[in-house]
Amino acid sequence: MNYFLMSMKKNVASRLRAVILAGMSVVALWSITPAMAQNHPLKTIDPEVEIYLPRWRITDPDLALQIYRLFEYKIGTNELRNAQGLPVKKSDLDQTRIIVTAAPRRPNRAFQPLQVQCGEAILHLTDIDADILDLIRGGRGATNLTYAHEFLLPEKPKNIAIATPTQNFLYEPGLTNHAVVFSLFEQSIKVGESGFFIRNQIGTDPVGYHFWSAGEGKVTLRRPLYKNEDLATKQKFPYLVNAYLGAGYRLTSGLAGQKTPIGFIDNRILNAGPGSKVVAGLDLYLPKAVPGFDGLGFSINVELPLADAEGQRIDETTYGQYAVPNRPTPVRPNFPVGSGDFSLAPLLRSTGQAGLFYHLWLDDKAEDYLRFDLGINYTDVREALVYTPVGERVKALTMNNVDGLASWRPQEVGDWIYLRAEYRKQREFPFGVSLQYANQMILGRAYIPLVGQWLFLEARYSRALRETRPFEIPGGFFMISPIVRFTL
Image 1 (cartoon, rainbow, N blue to C red):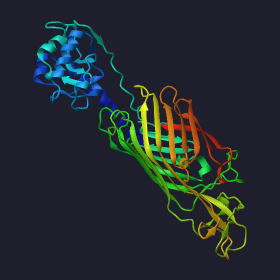
Image 2 (image 1 turned 120 degrees about the horizontal axis):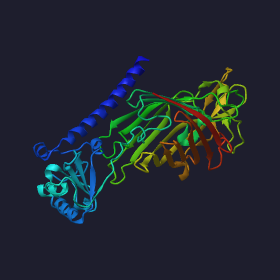
Image 3 (image 1 turned 30 degrees about the vertical axis):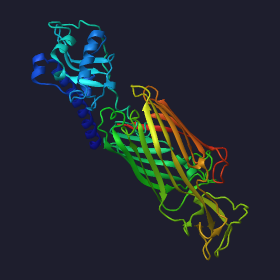
């Protein structure tokens, strides 16, 4: 408990300190005079302070033309840069978008310009000719602007906790110190301010097998890496890499004949094999890779089995199975076996996805978020023979030296394609929907709030768009669950 209280105090103190520093900056700017500006040249304005300063657009055509000519003259010099500090070209100038940022003024005093922006180019106070400065102030001795202009309303600071597309809004809440989220699909815990999450997920959604229809789950440790230092993009994705690493495990529930509190849900047949899996992946953001497409990135996810199923002794009551079918090549082991019937257990082995994604906000209020993924998918499902070894009474698995076993790996173009689209609304009424195509299956997902931002309802539905395989649930698989979120 002491740890939680200390974390809360630390968070409140840091935010209060930021507010105090912003306020002190504005007060300091308030006292700027022309003489002080010349003796103490100002070269940069903190973007988090600029949003509180007076700003106006010059609409007087004559004055706008004079300022435009000044910017045009300074093309190619070190004085003329954009907001990121990079050189500008003539095509970056815009005579209709000349904006002045000034220090807060006292009553009956003239404005003291701090910088002038023409299109994408910026000139600071010490780089502007004195005659032009006098005109921008309204003329010598003037206390008001005497030319045509349009004041710009102060911007509202963006809510960082909402404008964080790198995080899963539902299961990985934003800038909160601690969080616990629980549903039948997933459970997650966040500890501290670093963005470190522990997540437990039931199912393998990227290949279309959600909840227990995959016969497996996974526990992953998720951590953002490499801070984004670019001022233009870091508010939307503060980290350039979000990585995770963990282990997969086999589910033993969800089979026919088992009594569970959710026994009304369709039974599964697909299984994970004996042993564990390694689960790893990352989202790599590439804001400067393609000009004009700051939301571009690369993602990869892999799940690989660590143990071979060959000869493994099993508890057959925890494996989904089906009877040996009639096939052109009969299912027959080529080694001695004990008494008893054979059956087949389908095992989900290696899976993976890799490709590009693009995400964007639909407005400046960080309310509506879209993400699109395009890549390749790999899914490997194999049949294992369930048999009784000679002289034993327990069952065992084998996938070797057996005629007639089937396997399902990518064979057609549709097997390789991975497509996903997601929309999230993250403010007044937070909800989200997504649709995925992978493994020639569709997976739809939607969630809505029930009470505030701590109780939600989520539903998922998957269905094969090709002929249903023996281990897939005919007619599709639907599951619904409440989601409880606690944040501190």
